[in-house]
Image 1 (cartoon, rainbow, N blue to C red):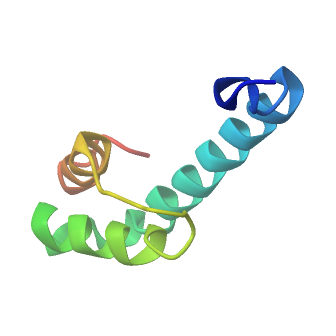
Image 2: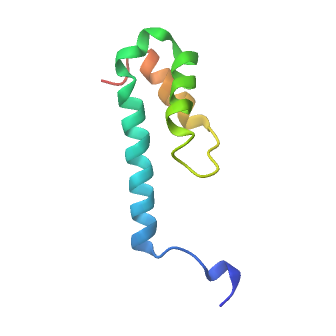
Amino acid sequence: MTEDQIVWNDQARAKILDDADRVLREAVLSLRDRRDEGSDALYAALIGLLENRFIDFEPGPDIRKYADALASGEIE
């Protein structure tokens, strides 16, 4: 077995992604009532909610996208 063959099976991989999506969704939705704080504050709040939930967390463009959407009222 080679190093690149050590991977999660498809069922486990799908569950990991589903769990990650759920964590992101819960974090975004938990900030809906704070939309008046502005995009930068919401961005920081999202990072604060997510950074300890993932190994090697690095905020990417998705976090900014959801912070902007929250601030503009696009997320119900």
